[in-house]
Length: 155
Image (cartoon, rainbow, N blue to C red; front, side):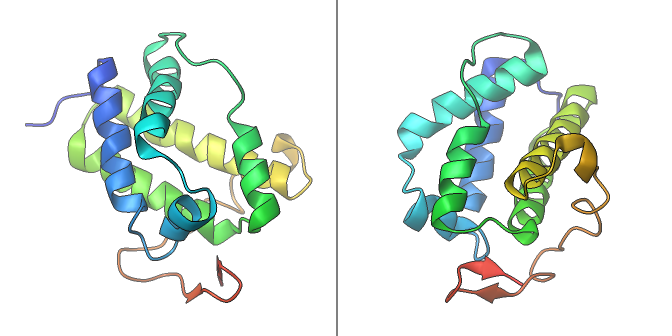
C-alpha cells in the first residue's frame, strides 16, 4: 500500500523517480542531458529541497526556480509540449510512488509552476495565462507528442 509524502526522504524518492524517467524520455530527456547537462548528483538535492519546502514547509530551499528555465529557454525554446510532458511524467511518478493529500498537492503545485513558467517564457504574467492553455489534454504514454530533433521541440 502506498503512503503519502511525509519526509525529506520521500521528496528525494519522488525527485529521483522523476529523473529516472525524464533523463531518458524521448520528448524532454535531451533538455536535461544535452542542453542543460545537469549533474544529477548536484541537482537532486537542490530540487529535493524545493519540493520539501513546497510540500512539507521545511524552508530548506532558497533561490529562484525560474532563472534556470529562462537560461535553458535561451538555448532551446521551451514549448508547451515540453511542459505538458514534464507534468505528465511528474504526475505518473507521484501516482506510482505515493497516495494521499500531499501527493495530490505535489501534482497541483507542479501544474501551477508549469503554467507560470510557460506564461513568463511567453512574455505574459501568470494571471494572463491561466491553466487552460497549458493544462488541456496531457499526452498519454507512448504518444500524444511528436519529436522533431532538428528544432529540438515537440510539435
